[in-house]
Image (cartoon, rainbow, N blue to C red; front, side, top):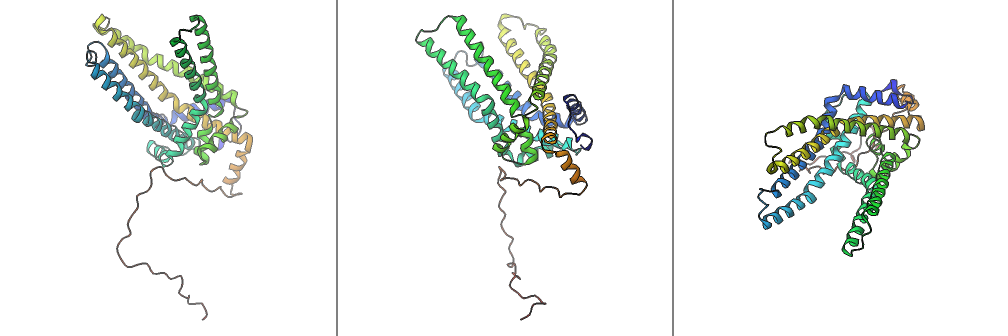
Length: 353
């Protein structure tokens, strides 16, 4: 990291990101594979659910079975799948940031140690993920939900205006919500890096990320555009051969198999998107960690502080105090035996009477 202790432009940050990613590709991809596999399993469950309710499925001709399956699916998604997915995404993002910080410092990283560091502060990273989601996607979800609710009431009262006006309003609200989400995400993008490196709590990390992003949000926006375009290109590159293979299966175009083929194509598209995100997320983690250090160099003179510490001119700061682990330690019973003797009250040999 010593050769990078200076302000970097966007091209240098991207070049350094690719170098670090290429040197540790398998480790970083292995870290990102955990939530990707979980999302793919959930997509598979939805795919099987669609097949069960489709023509010829077990729930197609049984309203009672269809209702039971629908309730079970909803309960499983709300109380099992969603919390598990949130936890997995938070741990993965924290583990990627731990690995990215180690890579930037030239340290050896591995999958197990990265997830172990993330697991120790799982509650903190989970709460930070929730705060980030509320700050970036909370308002758009509320606005879009309110719009659908209003349209539902207008439909029930038969007071819906013409379809073209409804479509324009919906597109305008959707565009505004998307712009708000991107702008808010860019403002808080460095919060995870600050939380991991500095060991601060979630709310402080949100404020710290907002402060550090000032002055570099244009470059972060360019990074977002590049990552989004790269993700879409990877998704198409992975999906096209598989979709062609499905279309070439004998009988796939028959009317009785069209619904199953369509569900399979949708599952393939979802799987390819998840795989592309697993490839892209380490790029984001490394690049944002480099942006974090770059902003600290520009705003706080971190390069001078680092060089002074390396030269022994100042004492290195004490490591951040870790909070309470989200899994409490197991209490151990004392071993049987004589009680320890307290020598604190006995006079020493040099003491005077």
